[in-house]
Image 1 (cartoon, rainbow, N blue to C red):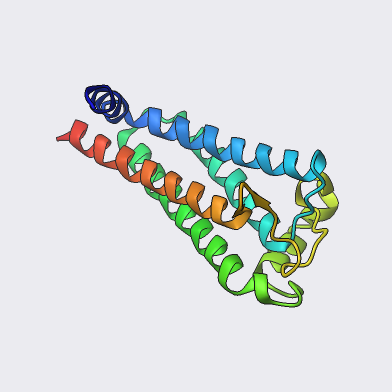
Image 2 (cartoon, helix red, strand yellow):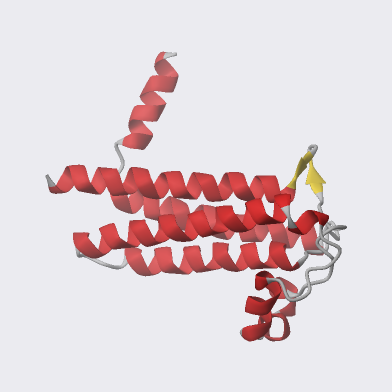
Length: 173
């Protein structure tokens, strides 16, 4: 029990930049895991899977940008933005779990519209190509569906941004 308390104290006493760096690493690791699942284990992504990849990538690059700042107000703003994008990812994952997975088609969903609007599936098809229907593409790992994992990771990112924001506020006071 003491080990757990000491471990948690060590994690919670990190600087706000630590939390942003952790958010960046987890975001890119999530995309890496999705790409391995797709290209190694042939689990084809649907529009909502690809949309969530896009959100993870945006969170990662935004986090890198916020890591460069020396201004604490910008850092605080960055943690809020990262938290909001994480919550957006949570909404996308919940939508995939509750609505899209039972829909016969992803055609003209907001996920497919965004990917099409930015022409991502043609610019980088190995990352943003949509190859499966939403209803038939719910892959599982250890009995848990990928959208559930995605929801959990987005929740973790949101939590990390809140903890980083609180830590920064404490340092400023």
